[in-house]
Length: 215
Figure 1: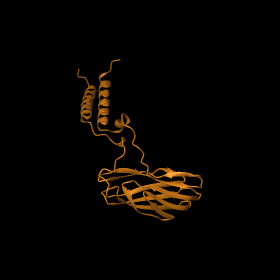
Figure 2: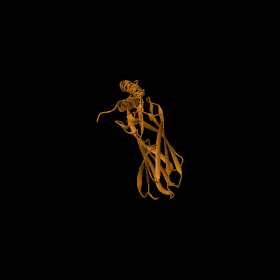
Figure 3: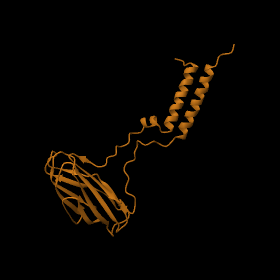
Figure 4: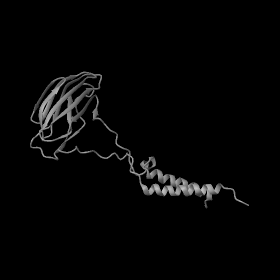
């Protein structure tokens, strides 16, 4: 089927506009060829206990101090009994101290431990671990640290809950995660230019098609 001049000019406008949108990395550009960005998660949560972990700072030089902060919360309506916190610290770090807002804290070698006991409904316990980067650590040493919680009762039954991982490195920024592929792409000048040309041609043809024909 042969297109009329009006239909052809409209098609040029649509194609041109589409190329401009794709070239700028707009919504159409994300719909074709890009995936949605990952949903950020503050930490792995396994009900009824949630554990989130952070470190400040996350990078340093030999003999620098780093502080881990771990939040342990009972999200259930029932108490959790015999709650025990364990954390094996990376080998290039040395534990300086372990403290907790509840329970008995201790450490031996690379192992930090807190016997919390009973965690009441809605109760949050904060564990703080201060570590020192060993003097023997080398620039580029890095690793991911994860803590764990065990409990004997409550609606969860016996089980282990792990915290979100935190990355630590020596003498450099911590390793980054996968890129957020849902972010906008960089503008493509070629596509934008081609789209503008087609769009202008379409508008011009559409304008001429609407002009009255002189007798």
